Amino acid sequence: MEQREFVMSKVALGFIPETLTVALDNLLPSRKTPEGLATSRKYRQILASITEIGLIEPLSVAPVSDDSRQHLLLDGHIRLIALRELGYTDAPCLIAKDDESYTYNTRINRISTIQEHYMIRRAIDRGVSPSRLAVALGVDVSLIHKKATLLDGVCEEATELLKDREFTTNVSRVLRQMKPIRQVECVELMISANNLTTSYADALLAATPADMLIDGKKLKKRAGVTQEQMSRMEREMTNVQGQYKLVEQTYGQDVLNMVLARGYLAKLLENKSVARFIKQRRPDVLEQFEVIVETTSLEQ
Image (cartoon, rainbow, N blue to C red; front, side, top):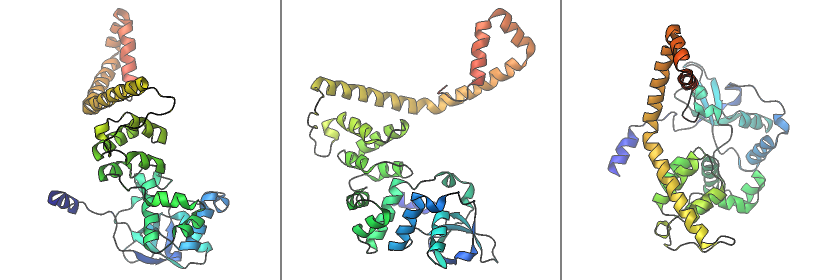
């Protein structure tokens, strides 16, 4: 624990933790407002949320200059428009230490599931009732309860892997039936397969050995699935996991070898005399060399 705290203390924050109240007139948008925004469902939802419970997530900004009160808006353009429509004159903002408008954050159009969970938890901790949140977000109150308890029973390592992902609350329901080490294994498999669906999580759960489950008991037989099919699924899933770990260990070296080979062959074929010689003697080899030169990833 002491070592982890020491490492964390060395990580520099990308923004100032304390919020700063900034006048809306001093916020400069960093991108154009999309057409039809005012009639979109997302905008109306944000408008209703601010009306009911106020602004939960501060805007992200960067100062234009040291001697100016103006700030460049990095994230929160839709919230800014909604605040202006509702008659607000200022808003709480997080001040970024660096201009993050060129980072990967600007390419994420939707809030992640875990970020949404933290926002809902923050609102509830401030005294906003789940029923009021449900009205503001236009969803059933049962969904608010599921989102509020999203991470209950999910280990920190699995949460860290999922922090920028979108998934349903049922995925958490499946994960919390497993022990932490198995949670991490399953989340890694789901991310590598780019499949964060409940059905895939259920399949991983069905293939989980009893000693990796929280209660230590094997799941009950599912309708339409024989014991033989379940056993075969467990063997196949174990095999897939083994192959995944093997590929994970050698992937970096394989990519390096591919880049070196591709670079060498590209230079080799740039020599017209060499290329002509190979074409005359071994046209089949030349064809394979050209395929390697045109390859940009191991998936090809």
